[in-house]
Every structure is written in C-alpha cells, then in structure tokens.
Image (cartoon, rainbow, N blue to C red):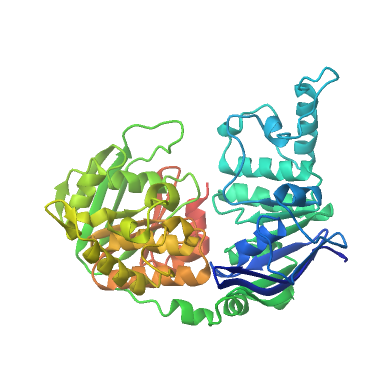
Length: 501
C-alpha cells in the first residue's frame, strides 16, 4: 500500500527539551495504525504536528498523498489535505443540532442565500445511514451521550472527505456498548479505504483493531511492527523498557478482621433522569483491604460511592469503626476520615489553573496554616515529599497542573487525599486515560496504603484492573449488588456474568 500520510525525521523542541527526536512513520488508506507509549512519550506532540497545530524543527518532512508539504499551516489546512483529528476532549457545539454541527463553517445555502436546512438534514441523514448511526439529524447535540457525540465527530470528519482520521483515546469515556459500536464503525471506515491513527492506553484495543503498531518512548520511535508480531508482554516492554511482571510485582493481601466501614441498605433518596436508582446496597470494607467495585457503565457504582461520601442523600446507615455516623455532606465525610478521588479529575479533582503545590494542599490547608496564614515553605516541603514518593514528573511543584500529563495529574489528585491519611480512601476509576507505567505506580501506591492499614475502595470499569488489585470484588448491575466475591471466586467469566443483564 502507498502511504497517504508519511512523516520523516520529525523532531520538536520546547524550551530546550526534546519532545520528539527524529520520528518517522507512515499510514496507508484502509489501515489502522495504533500509536502506543507512556504519557509524555510524544504521542500528542506528534499528532499536533501532523495536523498543523505545531511546526516541526527544521529537517523534518511531512508527505500527504505523495506530495511534500513544506508548511502545514493548521488544522483547517490539514483537513483540506484529507487529515483530521478527533481529540479526547470533544469539540462539538452542544446547543446546535447534529446537522448544524456537521455543516458548521460549510453550511449549505439556497439560491437566495439563506440556510438550506432541509438539504443539510438530508445530507446528514445520508451520512449517518452510511455509518449505521441510528441518530436523528435534528437532535440537539447536548442531549446526546458521550458515545453519540463521538459518533457525530466521526461523521463530521467523514463529511470533510477525510482520508486519514486520527482518534485520541476514543473509548476513554464510553460505555462498553458504545465502545463496541465505535469499533464496528472503525472497521467499516477501514473497509472503505479510510486510514485510522488510533491512540490508546488500552492494550486490548490495539490487538483488537490495529494492523500495525508504532511505539514511542521518550520522544523517539522504538519500532513499528505488525500486530501479529506482538503480544501484551512484548508491547509493554517496548513502551516502558521493563518487563510486565516488573511493573506490577506480586499480589499481597493486607486485610485484617477489623471493619473500617460498613454500609447497610443504602438507597438513593432522590433520583433524577440522569442518575441510576441505587437501592438496598450493603457492604463492608476492612482495614488493610482493597475492595473492588465493578459494573458496566450505568450500574450505579459512582452514585453509590457519592452517597457514602455525602454527595448524594440516602436512606440506610453507614458505620465507621462499628459506630453509626451521619454523612450528609463531603465535609462530614472528611471529618469522619474518608477521602474520595473522583472519576473526573479535571472537573472534580483538580483546579487546572492552579499549580501542584496549591492543588495538593487543598484538602488539608489547616496542616500548613497558623492564625489563617499559610506557610508556603511547609506547604512546598510537604508537596515535594509526595512528588518524590509518587514519581510525579514535573520540574517544580510550582508547575501548573493543567500542563501535566494525565498520569501525573492523577497522581496529584491521589496525593492530596493520601496526605490527609484517611481511614477509608475511595478511588473512582483510578487509572482511566493513563499509561501502563503510571497505572502500575498507582496500583503500587494503593497496595502500600493498604499495607499501612488504610481501607481502600477501588471503583473501576476496567475488569483486569479490578481482578489484579482487589482482595474482594463486589459487582453491581442496574443499581443493585448482584455478587460479593472472594479473590479466588472472582474470575472474568463470573464477574461479567454478574454484571451483564
């Protein structure tokens, strides 16, 4: 196959730091090329160069459809040449319809110069039908699910006659069903001659979808290989230069017989159209135990944890150390020794415009305060200890959190709660959107906390993660607990059977 997009010897330097070093790759029409690598490996920088957001250092070349492009001026120029990107943070306009989003900046007008909405709806309907998307062209995009918005982004890319579509972590926020639908659409696009560059931290997706894999590490291209020549262990070693077994270590159980937290008959008091009706959920977690909660998207996992942390009103009782407690607000939960690492680190876990030090101390400012004055020196010292302990990659604790990679942002969120030394730590989707080495760091930290007697509740839609880290597993389906399993009982088959209707 003749490559439609080819980059040769691409380098990029920021403030003296080499983000990319002589990277070369190519992709032909009708194939899926996966890009794998840790956070900070250079994947995003490379994608931005291929779509004109960044300019490469002198000496690099970009070839599109067999023609050297000396200067790619931006994403609009790249789209004109048949290359577009769908970012993890979607760029649809919620208050416009699907048709209006797809034809944004290229609207169809009638002979009088007015918008021809009928023509745009007809063209959109034809486009959606060609992709087997069961959506109404007149639907307001703000009323769609995340997965459906992703489909609109894909339809918009196809409407631009794109030959290469770059997808950045496309399934990170999708339900299992939506991810399956997306994979079928990708296969359909490939069969129609469209090339897909697929960036993901989910290794199983690489083996499921990709024809070839390019591995980046520390800004350099390690190798590009057909997927048939790789297995998970080899791919991990190429990404992080360590064996998979070295990353995760051996499982150890630190659970004691002492119950740290027990919930009895928790039921969501007020349900809205966007929440799951969680009902009659009872469970206990012991000191030193890692208790895993698994369920498909919409099972009620997050709603249950938000009740425990006082974010949602509930019926039922919660006991800490054998004593009933009233937890009707996050403040009360914190005062009783609970910590909560939220699922959405960007909107609920961090203040992106603040630096690492300021984010770190938000949960325990009183530790560094005297007479309402904050000791910046003490704050900095405390933060630096956790930066070293968790391996947060940053030149300084004064670095703005929004400029960190996803994995390092997640470590900051966890650090600010661990610094409080909670009796019970709830961690919702602890490794979503971060690379395998960062996942291993997070897992090791949770195991270390359990070894010190902390009770840890891990909520995840990643079944291999739940099975790897949990001492026991609780499964939810449609707002109810359907199974309580020991580590020995919790196999993939048993857990999925309890999670699926």
